[in-house]
Amino acid sequence: MKPNKIKSLWADGKPVLNGWLSIANAFTAEILAEQDYDSLTIDLQHGVIDYQAAVGMLQAMRSSEITPLVRVPWLDPAAIMKVLDAGAYGVICPMINNRAEAVELVSYVRYPPSGTRSLGPTRANFSAGSNYAAEADDNILCFAMIETAEAFRNVEEIVSTPGLDGVYIGPADLTLGLTGKRYPVGFDREEPEMVDAIQSILAKAHKAGIRAALHCGTPSYAAKAVGWGFDLVTLPNDVRLLASAASASVAEARKRIGR
Image (cartoon, rainbow, N blue to C red; front, side, top):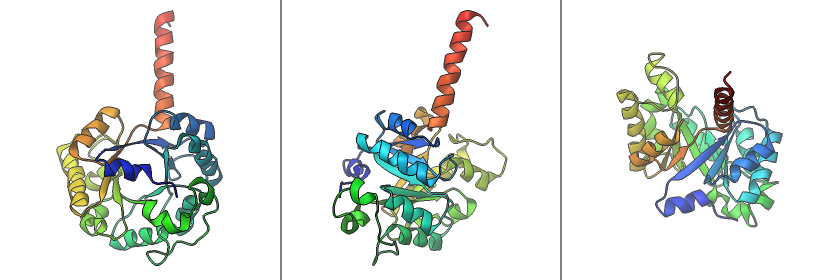
């Protein structure tokens, strides 16, 4: 099986720059896969992407040899096992709130005896290379999203779950969960209590010997998060990149033509 390049970067002490795909388009995935990200995540939770589109996007990304990840819609064994069979090298699962759910997540990602994943890597047999079934458990990454007040209370028991590779912080939902609507919704938190919460999760993950990832809204905040010690940071998604580039282009054109 082809090795997971995220794990190789971590072994060398390097952070991972992750891109994010929310548009159901193989060409968009192919373009972003050529932009020097270390990994790209296909978002099946909030992206406008179904399973068949995700398979085409995974195929389009293959030529770049970027590491493909998938955020699944929920803690659902069918969804998790299908994206792994399609060739994802890691799963990010939303709304993991306690140890029991984390154990359940790990079981869907790992083959017996470590888990309950069903054997049938239809596309992964080809995209990931030979001996997949024997080596997948050592290469596939399993991330539990920490993004609720319950998860924050239970973070120590979540990070101690055997077989869990890391936690992935969703700062927008985490802020809603911990503070309600006291603060504007968004990714790059600057409120002291939220910075403390994010850094607390990071510290507890590292103390447990696993990795920590953070969803970021800007490159500058991603760099700040790496400075804190985050192992993987996600940069703005394809929707935001397209909208911001188009907006800047139109604004410049209007400025130049005076309307």
